[in-house]
Length: 308
Image (cartoon, rainbow, N blue to C red):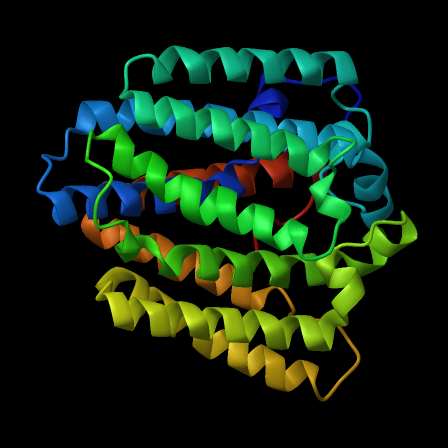
């Protein structure tokens, strides 16, 4: 395990792989805002919105790693803070810098966007910090992620381009999809969370029940997408649903948790491709992030991440 942090460590402390859904849903929100209201899609404003919202979410991710360092150590993951590569003081300083960047970029954008960034920051803090610590509260952990990454995220894209707040029902499938994916990811951490006394939704429900409920949520996303006429969400949710169903069936036949993350990985890919179809430049960006992440974790920690 490396003992001294490198500049790359501070970059990957932001967890770029799980920033991908942030960018994906923000882009989808911007596209819907433009298409639904007829607002021109100003890419300069959109870029400022991406920078601001990404910085605020990344700050929340760092805070989460600070508060989850014991759980992450027990689970053998997210080594940078949990294994002392980056100290707590440095991590808090990076958090402050990210929040400052977020506010600076938000100052260029409509007032509604600023409110959404503030709400996202507050929810991110409540997710990890006491006395709220929504991460350890069953149901509320899933609801918080659904709101932050499915509702606020798409609204951030919508408002960043200056679209008026009308016709928002088109965004309804996204919180359900995010809830499905987040719940399924908590199932992979059941042992580590339970060992540290965390009562997440995954711990309370268990793998079998948890993956069934995740499947129902993704099916709900598909149904709502069809109802409101959201074609990108319909395509991505149906593609994702297939793997949720397969995993739910296989988990019902065995006690092992192998492969429990497959639906979440496929969903991330499906929704990212949906955004990439609308914003073609997004695809090469994703490829760069994935390749650099694989190189970094391979050279720094000798592990293969990300992997299917």
